[in-house]
Length: 99
Image (cartoon, rainbow, N blue to C red; front, side):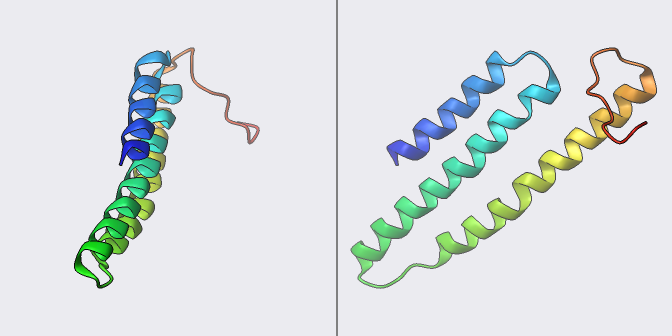
């Protein structure tokens, strides 16, 4: 539980420390993913030992967070990149594919 809280805290601090959107989007996403994975693992172990049977709710939580967080990051970053390039912003990352 403390590991999960620490990872999530590092992600939140990264959100505050980075300068622009493209840098800020990575830290909380990693913090949320890794923090949730650690929290689900701690919960799985605790409640499996407490109830003397496997608890699978945390496995579902792990799967959904692992699948949805990176997809959300990608969609947010692509929409921001499209908007910034359309508006002609100067601090947009390069295209990388020759555009």
